[in-house]
Length: 111
Length: 114
Image 1 (cartoon, chains in turn red, purple):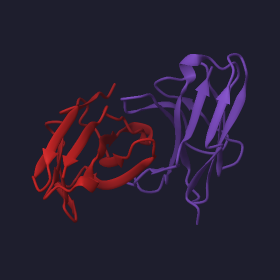
Image 2 (image 1 turned 90 degrees about the vertical axis):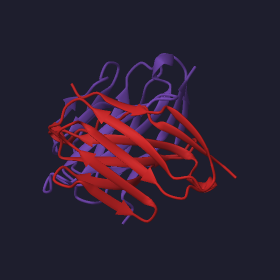
Image 3 (image 1 turned 60 degrees about the vertical axis):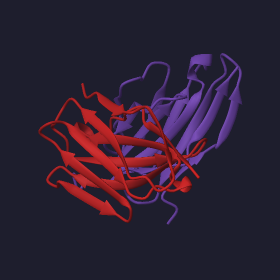
């Protein structure tokens, strides 16, 4: 059974800092891994999808890396802004196209 | 192209009442999923379907039933609601054709059972 751990559970940084969110998973047999953003009381916004054959995927100030063999992914956010404050969820996609979610990292960017 | 829609958006039930949540997608996706999200947690898979007329159990299926009579719709039923089923429910869909495809999520249904 896939298990996903996200560290840290919560993070508070001043505006402008670069930061890294970590995601680890126990079963490396995945098709891809998605990173999502969730604002309080809202739905999921897909940020990045990184295929199992890829090492990195970039979108604007966001960069996701994937090391499938070691069961790790990181989400790098450059030059953080208060608008980046949200919960970030990672979810590897396994058999039957099932996503398994971590509990998320709650990010607060202070002005 | 509406993507994935969920009905209703909010609902309050009393213990023992029943209800059905509707998920609809207009992307011709074969795979559909129901997740629940409890406070401070990620999403957990309740049931899923790999095609019309098929359903399977996920991680937390107890207390729920599902049906996929039409390809575009996936229904989640609560026969006798319990306070432990208070949660936010998300539906998702994905195409079977590409193994690396992104899952698309609906906006969620917030259910409270008193």
